[in-house]
Image (cartoon, rainbow, N blue to C red; front, side, top):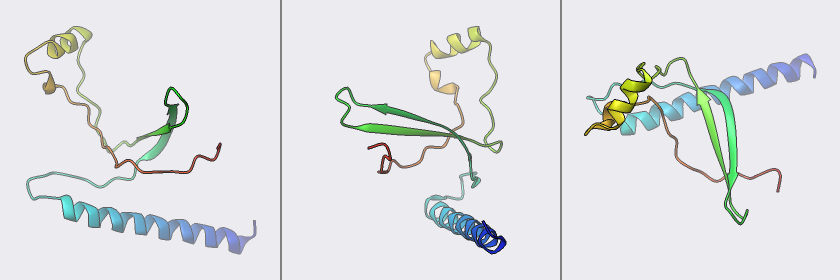
Length: 110
């Protein structure tokens, strides 16, 4: 790769990052209310889990990402967790997460 193509590649990545941030901010602006406390982050890739239907006709990819900006869930002992889950209100234990909208992708192995 030449120096100019490397620079062009870097510039393209930077432009894509800026576009991504603009789109996120636009989306957040549409969904954001003044009572919500939110932060836009760009997660780092983690792992991708691939599964399929029993017939094998449909495949589902689950991309698991990570970010130091997302706090870990509260620490509980096993006994405390079991007690909470068996309580009348098990929703007291929440794992911070963000879920994106499902979308169609092309499977390269087809």
